[in-house]
Amino acid sequence: MTIALGPLSPASSTQAAWNRKHLLGLEDLTREEIVGILDTAESFAEISTRSRKKVPALTGRIVFNLFFENSTRTRTSFSLAAKRLSADTQDFTASVSSLSKGESFIDTARNIEAMGADVMVVRHPTPGAPHLLAQHVGASIINAGDGAHEHPTQGLLDLLTIRRAKGRIQGLTVGLVGDILHSRVARSNICGLLKLGARVIVCGPPTLVPRGMERLGCEVAYHLDEILPECDVVNVLRIQFERQQKGLFPSVAEYSRFYGMTQARVERGKDDLLLLAPGPINRGVELTPEVADGPHSAILDQVTNGLAVRMAVLYLLSGKLEPKGPASDAVPVA
Ligand code: CP
Picture 1 (cartoon, rainbow, N blue to C red):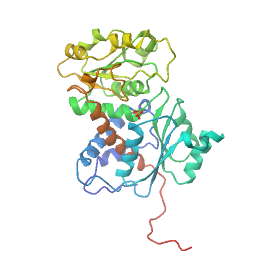
Picture 2: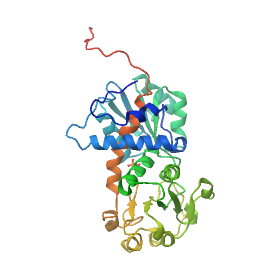
Picture 3: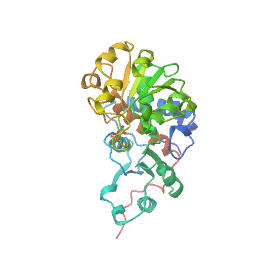
Picture 4: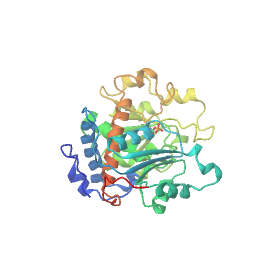
């Protein structure tokens, strides 16, 4: 299937190389596929600066957001990305659905597919839920975060933000700091950063860093102040209070004292230290407000880049969608 983008034409050679129906995790992707998504996202980032931001790539397609967990950035970003590609979009909100009457996850998705969904963007608290759906429906599935497993588009937008700020990823030292244990963002970052040649150090309290991280290819540290001078980038992960049991660290104040990104810590880092945080942020816990809003912070750039990444992912997957019937201007007669 050829998507006519006319003069916009992002990375057509990338689409030719793209051969996947789903995006379930960065663990599955090759280095070339990740670079292909980032290059395609660059083209869409450029399109987003134009006065006419809409392209016809997904005309006639239906993109459903199936969110079984709350979201601000991911859900709205996918909605807007789909609209910019001229798709019809629909949000499904689990809390007001017939799940409360006992309908299963798979039956819910199959009913949504029966309405014509071509793409389902799925966030679920259970690791592997999007993978399960990919086995039971014909639509393309995009993992928008599955428990503590993966959040591939967050990993991709973090990579794009680093590459845009630093001009490369190869050879950079990236610290992932905080709640590694409960973080799907950490897993997607580790997979993507290592494939693109970065050195990755995970750092947090021993209770929040799972054993065996070295086997993935990253280094492990427990003292932020020791690794900070080596880092080109620090990605500050949120303490996932909703996922963790009590007692994994003595108190929030103590966590902030040892792992919080303060102005004093920023000043002990490299002059061009880049700070990322996937959001939502707990101001005063993982980082102080002056750091979150300061010159080293790329937090809002990440959100902007997320839109381009999600347009790129939808665009690339669209080449693998089932063909639709021919378009017709005929008005159905009752
Ligand atoms: N970073 C992220 O996934 O944010 P939301 O939970 O708001 O989507």
